[in-house]
Image 1 (tube, rainbow, N blue to C red):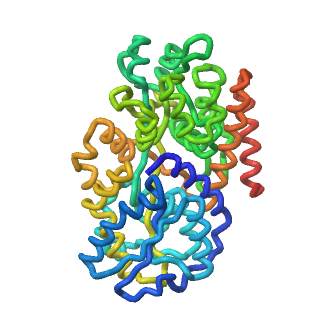
Image 2: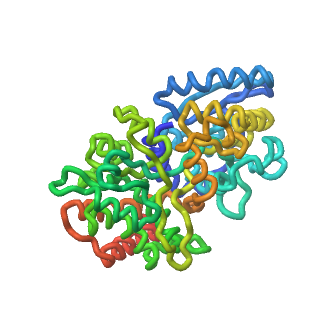
Image 3: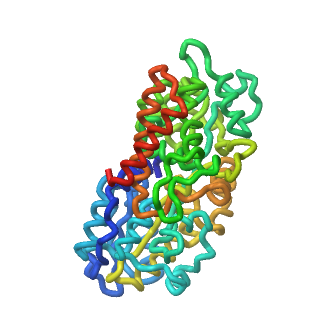
Length: 439
């Protein structure tokens, strides 16, 4: 899996706004009998063909075990959500489909997917096999999930070991305050080197960090009735915490304002322009592809504020990843067998290794492949210090409104202007107004 793909996941999620009134599928496009299912797989690998190469042998295993053939279609993230939402109204959908987990509540509201009640959960091995955090991103709170986790991701702090040593820094920062202090030590006059680089032009990344730091500050972006509460003092502090890296503290590369994806920011990190980078676990594959050796960098959890403010939580990632769901009206028996197979410990290990993803089941997470220091750290974050993005129908509008507001603030800061708390509050006021007006 590539981090750039996850960026597109959240980008595509914007299209789902307003899908709540759609109806359930009445039939599958597989024309399937009990011995055939159609599977829409998301593009997790380096190409569509790469996915076919990875999944092909595993689907043959499934057919050999069950006698059920799988008609595979790998769909790019730019097209997947449109195809899914069209299928919910046309009735011509697959039996099984991958979805970005931030879509869970929106797609749940369509009524087009099989409910994973206890009976269906038992058919796929039981809910207890999944990480509780990953299960928290499978639908709206208090409602029966309509998807289950398939591939996991979490955030971490990547840092350049030589730059840290040269600056006399022996260990990665243990608190957010230490991160800022270290970043100042790592920033050199003349703009040759900065402490950190950001994907500041990515509204999705911005929204993710607004949410993560909001959790640390004790804030919430929606109340219990799902009404936006963007402009609370806690959320203002959360956004400013991130913006200050480039504004007040001036420790983030000015180019951060132009980076539309984490992959763009990686070039600063591997090119020696920045000593730290915030990214999800599969960011390492791009770092290595850019020519940086694994021995040249290390990873640590993104540090939290210490001490935490009143009501603050030790959260340093959102629950990122991909879920798997079954359309109603298709080959439900075959779909449940297939989802059980794909989420089995053995397949989790095979697929997550191939896609540089994290297991979403406790058993698979124990495999030696995920016990390396780096992988173990990311698995621990996903399992213990990650929180789900707001599981509401309009989650995508939160990402676009808040994320784009932060993008504008970062662009302002990159010109050398200071972004004040009043500036942040006004931006969040405007974002909340847009959210409430549907804009």
